[in-house]
Length: 406
Ligand SMILES: Cc1ncc(COP(=O)(O)O)c(C=O)c1O
Image (tube, rainbow, N blue to C red):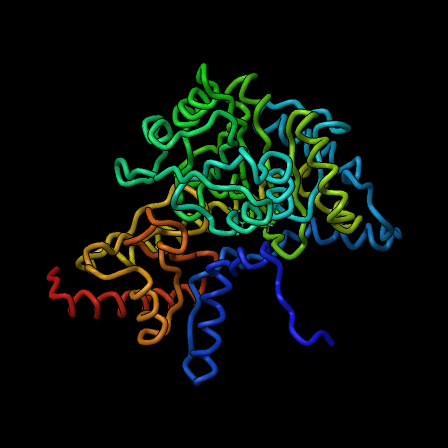
């Protein structure tokens, strides 16, 4: 046994994600005998559709348990190409322009690995944003240029002006997430066109890394638009990252994919081979079935989660100093609590300790997230009913304490 272990500089730059930090705190509170309801995680509680489960079982029974093709099984790469053509009108060569990864997590890590470095290539990142991007950015030694999101018409957005204001170098890739965790914005074609115009401005040359993991969880008749579909030029500078985790309720299956121009994908493939031999072969077979079968299951999920979203917005309405923001997609409602006059982290701590409900403070997702709470509706049924009852009660107590009147 080594006497003393000194982690490397690289490791010292890492922190657990907000969900993991809050989970640790919640376990301590539960160990003291307090019951907690979690409205925190982005894990759909609806089951993986049975035709996908059956496909995995069939494949396993057929002996599909050996190493998979390192790029991903050819049938799954073809299924990804077919899906991207069907949904976004995008054409990719499954042999050269598509990779299969262990969830979007690995796709994001290898895309960043191919595009940033510890010299002059950092990354432009919206704020607030899914905090787990910070880990791989830090591991690759890159700096981050924060793009503060602006609230326009009650929704977070990125504006051309906002991008120009923080712009420093011509080559940093821009990391986008639409539908956007945590804020729930589904970027419109116009918004994406503006961002792409910025990316190809005469003095700029930015690649886009586009995480589209919530693509089918979009509400009120909206449609997801991939930045790659904006123009031929956009396609040539965009890496699409996706996974089956959220869209087919397959978080534990660990299967995702990337699509992009061949030079990007070749570089990513080299990194991928150092880190993984890919998802299990039978998981890839099931994923191919998921992507190519009838998509009714994803439409049903969107209806279910839209209902839950409405339930959250409804239950949190009418609390003085508190305003739920209606998300257009994803699994979270951002609740504006600026009217309570307290830091979001203090509010989430109070809610855990005093009201027995766990949500994440918006500041965990960046400075622009301060003044908000992220409330997940990935869990429904009794968990959501009870969680919302406790959340409403806790927020009302804080509103009363701050002298707010309805
Ligand atoms: C925006 C975003 N990207 C990526 C992931 C991770 O996805 P996967 O399960 O495919 O690794 C999550 C999970 O919460 C997420 O919210």
